[in-house]
Length: 125
Image 1 (cartoon, rainbow, N blue to C red):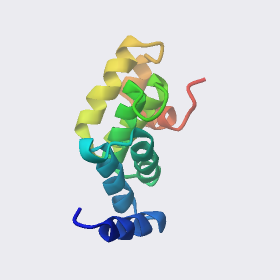
Image 2 (image 1 turned 90 degrees about the vertical axis):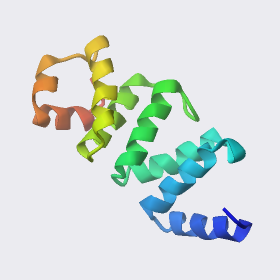
Image 3 (image 1 turned 135 degrees about the vertical axis):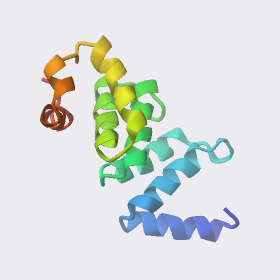
């Protein structure tokens, strides 16, 4: 980023609802030079909730390790599953490792995309 005004412009675009700009800011605040885990998570979550697959993967990872947010494996799996359905193949592996090891395991869920869809829209109760 060359100037503060460049960042201000991107923030303005992100605030107007651009998932790509929100994702950019999430990555920007994840960079060691500008590190702010809470700010990074805020922007990544906004993008993820608009269906941005890469942001969903990052949000899942943040929940998995507790970066910028309290650790929550159930939400990590939920965002990994959403990322997978948005074309992020690595996310499937990330979510399945928990589905196989945790209380979340359910063979029917693993065998059916419709069950996956129900799973990612549930609160796991």
